[in-house]
Image (cartoon, rainbow, N blue to C red; front, side):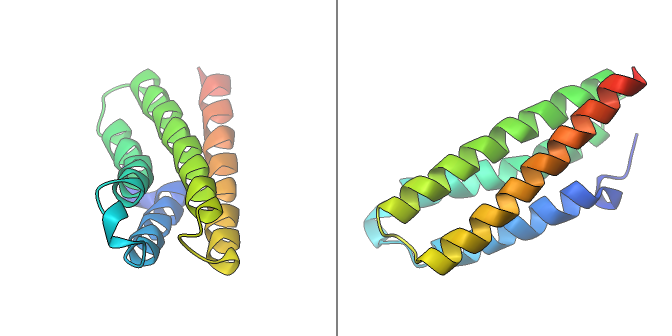
Length: 119
């Protein structure tokens, strides 16, 4: 079992999730249970899946959870785009969050490739 807090991608995705929570507080109140909730769930699923994968007994299980985290990152990326195009936050917030999720996706992709090469 690995300590997920030692993973740079977990640290970065955790900070991303905190930023999403802060930014989505300002979404319209009628979206509290819509896009805001979906974005929060998708973003928090990234570090949560990394943590769960680290708690598993095998590298194969860990790799599977890293792949799931990558899917959640892609979902987060889309919801950010949707929220931006619906005018729920400004271009600066979208640029910052969009850049961050793109970097997280690259990190997750690199981790998956490393795990595949090691197996």
